[in-house]
Image 1: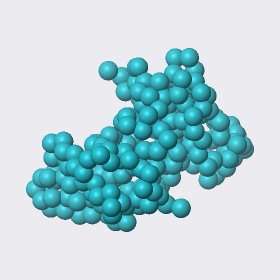
Image 2: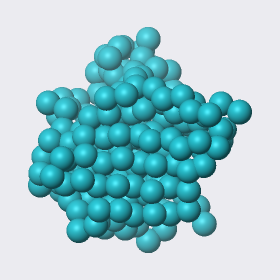
Image 3: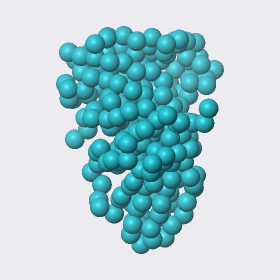
Image 4: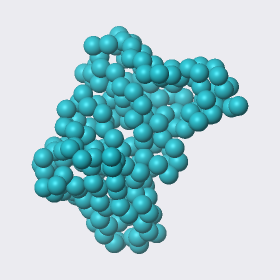
Length: 110
Length: 114
């Protein structure tokens, strides 16, 4: 039972354009979400979070949108840079534990 | 500031052996959680400890156990290793066990069971 899903295993974007990574969840009780970036052979790095009382949170080039009615969140990266190439995980925080999606591998081409 | 540190970074063990992985959280953080990540999947929750007490356990067999020490560092033990235990084991540090706090991860321990 996959409670957090990232249905796109990979995404390729041109440098300077927008990257949009999507995430769906099934449990309407989730009320705090986080995005992590992961390079090979490293642990996940925290990027940005959002609580369910908001529908948008912005930090520099990264913006997370939350649509509670659709149980959907997305991460926008503008402008995309080659250094953004990594695997991105969304996670829901529930009872102190994180429930992760499968990840989306982003490739930003120069 | 030191981040979350895990040791060792890599480990090769034989089936049936036992392994102990170690984690030191960020200074001031009292919650430590353990995750297993296999290739192509997101991290899966194993254990959560807060103030030396177990606060949560994921869907893992009893061969997996953990503890947290008074200095908030933690150990994850896996007994009777199976080939399927080969994975990246991640430790996450949080200030508290509330949902509304960010979790910060160590670089992980890559365990290979042969």
